Image (cartoon, rainbow, N blue to C red; front, side):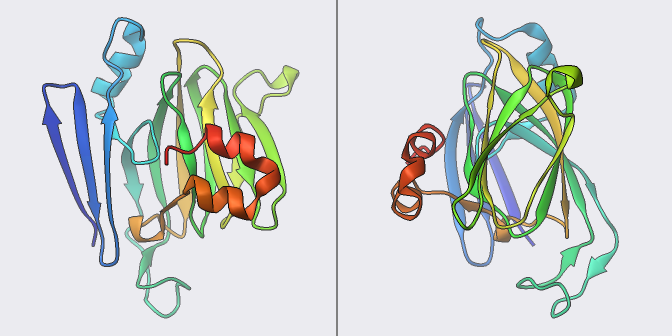
Length: 202
């Protein structure tokens, strides 16, 4: 079981503490509630009850299957739900930092600006995918990130946002979440130093 604690200070910053059996993640993230962001984005954050995510952006879990894969059969440390899904909102004022999970993750585009999803496979192959609704010009509304790949994302529009959904199977657990460290990733994938530096915070 993951304990999630959110402390709001003057609606300006939120400290996110995600505590599992083996790790503690603590991040301080700035909420995009300023004049530079549009009203629609602020309304989405409020109406969808989104909260800051450690990788950047805002999220809320919308589905967690009742079905459970028992420990020993899941391939993970402990039991996992069959599947989980979240809303995920990313703004141009931030980015989704490089991270990875062992499960496949499906991104579904809903609203706002298209995004670039940057991915580095375990064997070091870099790809960039544009997720959006302009299909005739090469954007795709759905994309699968294979388990084990490092990935991060940015919003293409200036002073804009993207609202997507992310579905994970077997279900997501913060025990599986690994946030990439710049020095470690550059050491492992030196030819991708530029994009790694752009999509890591430390």
